[in-house]
Image (cartoon, rainbow, N blue to C red; front, side):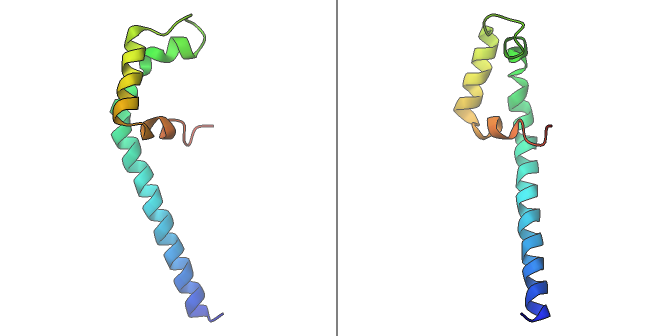
Length: 79
């Protein structure tokens, strides 16, 4: 393979990765406010409450209705 094709392929790959990364950042920015509504679910999720609060359920319904993708990115990048 000629070096110019390899260089061109690497450049295209870098551009694609950059595009995907910027989309993730946009989603995180958009979802930040949506996920704040789920903060009331933390005691239930953490095992400190026997049942979720009404606010927790309402917040989850809102996220499911308007922005399901926010549930997917909420855990990305966390170890």
